[in-house]
Length: 96
Image 1: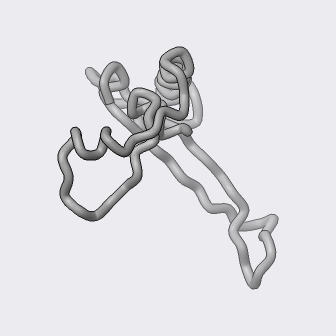
Image 2 (image 1 turned 180 degrees about the vertical axis):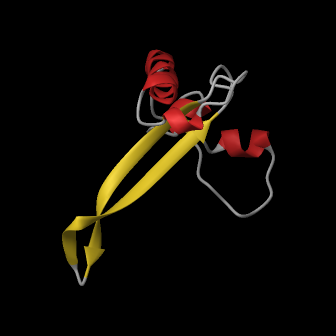
């Protein structure tokens, strides 16, 4: 859903095959409303400006992003000491 907010609210199945935007949109599914897209883009931008994604800021660009943290799995168990970090960024946030 987080990435759908960057794609006008549509979930688009990834593929390694070359396809046109029209072909991708033909099988896309709307999963969030326009209102939710607007709110999520605002929060992504705020996160890059003042939150945990501040290092993604680029002067002159409206950058947005979402950070995430999860515990690593070691020998089939979640580790309390080791984390896995992720970050999704997009720009320009007006039309990513």
